Image (cartoon, rainbow, N blue to C red; front, top):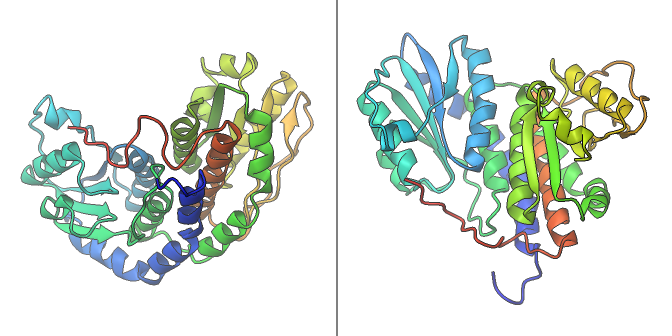
Length: 350
């Protein structure tokens, strides 16, 4: 980054562009959904998503949506099966969605070519219309988020998530740009939490269902901007062995996005507090504000309605809260979130 730019300024500027980027995608939602419907094989055997990095977290989000909306199995493809193991798989009847912000990651391109030649129909989602991905898919959709210079993906990540949702036919996303604007205008909750956590070297971020994708992405943002060992886990997985880490003192950020799995997240927070552990939930527009639970069993007796935002929109909004927290933590620790040490914008994994 240029030497006269304040640390974190580029990331902040790109975060601030998200409401406009998301609003543009919503205006073309019907067209994108029609494009994907036309690309689907008939009959549809299933859906697979292929991605790396932040895009892989968007793919987890898409996997939940695709299976619930299509009524067909959905999962994540493993690129190394095609780049290292050279697997021979029959992909007839499958819709494969490839996510790559740059559209240039070699293993994503190789995997797209392999599954397409084996019978899949492939839809690509990228931020670069002219990227090599265009030559390896049947249909290309662009997030149209504009150039992204900070190493942490912010606007391209939330744009991918929204594009996945609208292209798969999720309704009711119109309020998302306004909710993201409200979050960006209210940085205090993330800044206050960053001030408290600036000395920690480990964090747990957890959610369930669709919110699991947000937990993974927020953990990645914190890791890459701060060097903190942040682990994203589902609430169900955390209740197994990893719960010992929380009981040993690792703070827990609970991702509450409403929806059917939110009661599990709330119950986990209450249980952790009863054990003397720290469990924190950052507020989101469209959801009732939760109280922090630290060393006390007090908390909501039940789960309030989700409010104005549908669950998929709340998950995307939660990712923006996580971006705020990652940036604030990096600055609190004296790091530059725009250009974390040892990282580049495009990681050319093969």
